[in-house]
Length: 157
Image 1 (cartoon, rainbow, N blue to C red):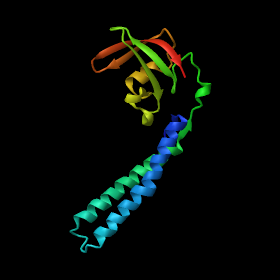
Image 2: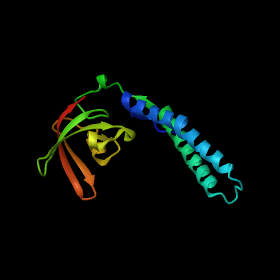
Image 3: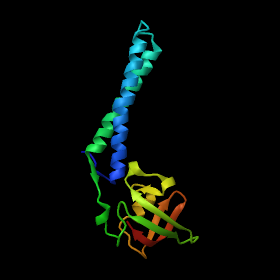
Image 4: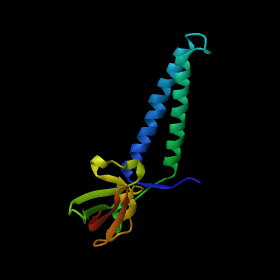
């Protein structure tokens, strides 16, 4: 059974653009490499042909997986997000109770995660720990270095 994933409009568009690029740019390029390698003669000892065929197989696998992800994707309307609790697409301001450091993250689907853009996956330890929490709650996040405690300061869209 396939897993349904939730995306923002931009996140789903990014996935569709990636699929389009694979199908219209990468697939023809690999087909061309196979044709060139085939033209070089004996296929039984042709390393270029073997490498191109392997690359083609990997690309087709990626395309199939991405098509499955897209077919099971659902768009979340962020205008209807309840800001009393942390959900996917919520922007959360948290404070580390140990050192007082404050951070702001937006919880997104795994494929949209981008730490530089302050977007963390709901599948990450911090994301999982924050889901369902409200302002004032303390989230206990299990990390390899032990449990970190974060206070939820603010939840917004």
